[in-house]
Image (tube, rainbow, N blue to C red):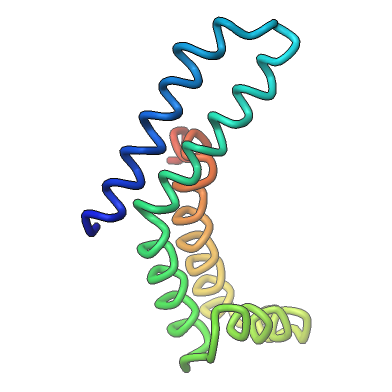
Length: 124
């Protein structure tokens, strides 16, 4: 992580702390939900700055291995994979199904670590 990212993360974390520790208690209770929603968005943004590039690398690697070739953009790879799934390419080959599920699991865990890390706490 470069220092610009660290600074952006620090700014988001400091602003989030002020929001929750200073402003939230001063707000009318009717605005607490919105304040917490903003705080959650700030936490997600900070995690995206810190972990987003890693999640993108994990997805690109998993998709390249799964599709057995590098696609143009992540959207291109997702579109190709969706077409293969719709076309039944993974329906009958147990090894291909296993590889698909492993790749999708890796990709989803990387993105959940950013958007909803609590969802990974109970993972076995």
